[in-house]
Amino acid sequence: MKIDAVDFFYASMPEVTLEADGSQDALLVRVTAGDHVGWGECEASPLTSIAAFVAPRSHGVCQPVGASVLGESLDGPEDIARIARLVARNSMDLLQAAHTWSGIEIALWDLLGRAREEPVWRMLGYAESHAKLPYASMLFGATPQDTLERARSVQARGFHAVKFGWGRYGTGSAAEDADHVAAAREGLGSDALLLVDAGQIWGDDLQPALERLPALEAAGATWLEEPFLPHAFVPHAELARAARGVGIAGGEGAHTVHMATNLIDYGNVRFVQIDAARIGGIGPAKEVADHAVASGVTFVNHTFTSHLALSASLQPFAGLADHRICEYPVEPKRVAEVLSVQHITPDHNGEIRAPDAPGLGIDVDLDALRPYLRTVDIAIDGVPVFSSPLPVDGPPKVNAIS
Ligand SMILES: [Mg+2]
Image (tube, rainbow, N blue to C red; front, side, top):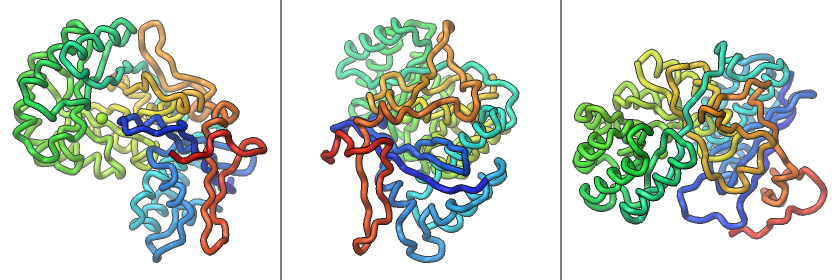
């Protein structure tokens, strides 16, 4: 097969707000090779990622991603890895290349799996897609009482693992945060897993993170996520040394394999959280999963958008029975929800699995997505270099950029 076309579909809610919710817009990627089609999704900043595919080269190693992809042969996973090396070399100075390539890489795996009629996780060498325990992500409440009520409500929805984060956590005193963590534990009861996400709030400052440890230990928190900037390996390692029961988690910011493996090797995280739509796709995420297994670290997916992206994020560790915790978008925005025909829903045990179906096992619903599609035209000296593909005739219903 030869890669004939790569099409980008940009969709968004009518209004994109300042909340830390990555499901407000989406960039879908459709790859066509002969009669075969595959779909992927890039994480974050759709227009920037489209531009990285078509931007004129600045020099020999700052080429658009498209230069390394279009016309390439695709006959097996080794071709995906080969094209990944081309992108890394030819676009080494183009910082958005990793996000753009991630969505294309995912679509290439989907296309290959559909052509071979086997799930991506099987092409990665796994014999089985094991059950995962999805956790619900929530913001801390405005008050400890509010946090308590949120915890009770999500517990009532049947989740056995819950992550609280962001909000005011880390911005006030350690005593205030301790009250929120204790309230979360009280609302969840003693059995549910409690996870806490600091969202990089302390930069590289170890002390405030150390001050939060006693409350996290007392509440039996499983992990403290992203206490520091993703490259700040030294404070990660020092916090990990000081922590007893609670593990340090991180890795969602990784957009190369080495960013993630360094966090394992030098940051001593106990949980590495990888977003396949950021790190360069499913192949690099699987490399991190292999390194995590060899290092005694638990691999966790990171994903916060559609079930297409969720399926992609599950593939790299689908066959790892002992790596059970997984992120699951509980309340995605409508655009992320309607985007796919199928949804990965918890079974009677409250568990989910990567689909046992060709490719990613998720079909894109362009008709349902149509009200959210945005029209993008990029021209240079009046000559078009990109125009949105439309699934049907006529302009999309949402036009205003807000
Ligand atoms: Mg996080």
